[in-house]
Image 1 (tube, rainbow, N blue to C red):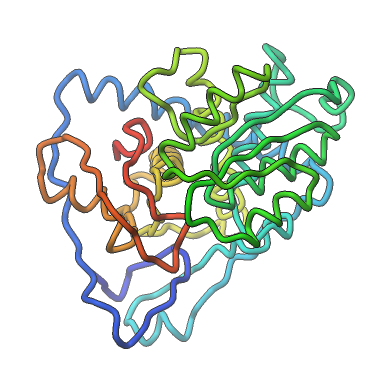
Image 2: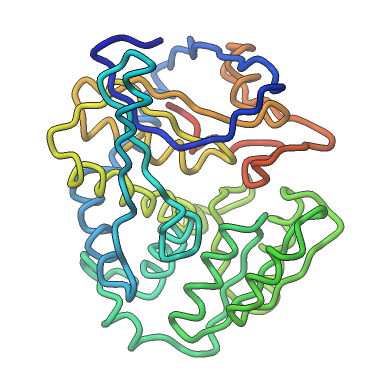
Length: 323
C-alpha cells in the first residue's frame, strides 16, 4: 500500500517489462504463548545498546565508512509518498555486499571471549593466532566477507560453495588468500559439509544459518552474525535522525538479515514500521509459508533461476524469520 504520508526504506532491484506479477501475502500467523516468549527473548538480543556497541566495533575496523543513504525524492513523488530511501550496501568495505558486518562481529566475539563490549579491532588483532582457520559455506557474498576478515586478521579461511556457483565469485574469494572449492551439492548440503570441515581441521564454523543439530554454544555464532547486521539501521538513524519510516523492505534469503533488522526495528520505532520481506519468485519459502498460514516453514525444490543468486535458497532458518 502507499499513501501521501508513507516513508519507505528498502533496497534497489531490477524490474523487467516481461517479469511476472509480484505476489504478496499478509502474515496472519498468531503466536501462541510459547512462541511469543521465544520471540520476545530473541528480540531482546537486538537492543539499542547492543547495536550501538556493535556499531562502535565496526567503526574501529580499517576502511570502515557508513554506506550511502540515497533519498529517491523524484521516485517518491511519482509513487505519491513523502519519502523513499535506499541504503546502498554495494559500498560496504568495497565488497559490494553487507554480509561482512555479520562475519566480522561474530569473529570478534570469538576472539574476545567474555570481554566487555564495545570491542576494538586494534585490541583484538593482537590476540590472533595466524593458524586460526575460518570455515564457511556460501553462494558468494558471505564467504567473500569471511575471506576479507581472514585477510584483515592475517589468518586462514576455507570456503565451500554449492553447485552452479559462478566461477568468478569463487576466484574473488581466492584472491583474498582463502581456499575455496565448488562442490557438487546444493547450498544446504554445503553448510553441513562446512560444519564437518571445521570440526575436522579445528576451525571456527562461521555460518549465518543455525542447524537443527547445533548446540546452544554453536548457535552463538549465527546469532552474532545476525546482530552484526544491525549496524545498517544504526547508520540509518544517524543519517536520517528525524525519519520515522512506515514501511521497510528487507530481502529474505535464509532469513538472518530480515530477522535481524526486523527484531532491531522493534527497539527503534514505536509503533514499529510494517515490514515487507522480498524474495525471488522461484525461492519463495517465506511467501509459501505465509500462504499456508499454519506456522510451519515451507521449502522449495529444484533449479532456482534468479538474478539474485544470493537469495536462491531452498529453506529459511526458523530463528531468523519469526517477525
